[in-house]
Image (cartoon, one colour):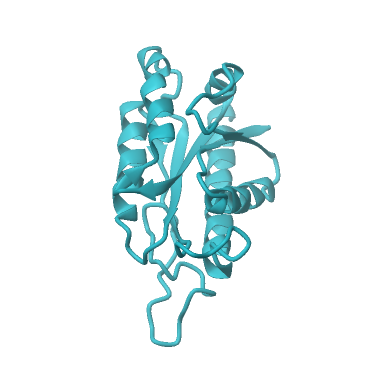
Length: 195
């Protein structure tokens, strides 16, 4: 079985929904098993998580975008990944990332770029969304990739919206399709290496 790990932080529950959509998409792929690992409010994670990440074929990063970057809790996790970096434990694993913020832009690209840089320091192989943007006047929040993320899955969760209200339908479907794409690529890669 191909192992997919989703490691993320969520402050208000919006990123939980995005992570669940990524997990749903990845889980829909035959031969893929998914483990979702949530970073705690104090920035700590269960020590066993490091073993799960070392065993994974793909690692998908997630965090809300706060003040132009990932939440400090995710940054703490990234800093602690230096032990995995030192041993090249994540080298050649598939990588991807997702984020959301209250604004249409909200500097979400900075968070995706942070995830990308982290993945490259670990020697991972980054997979983008592969989705065309929904960018005409007829499109809106219910359409796939309305936020036009190419490098990773982006979502908008208005500051006064509960986790039940946002992210919206289109952003969640974008996350689902992204999880599916990463899992498909990871399965193909694992099968090619095994052949």
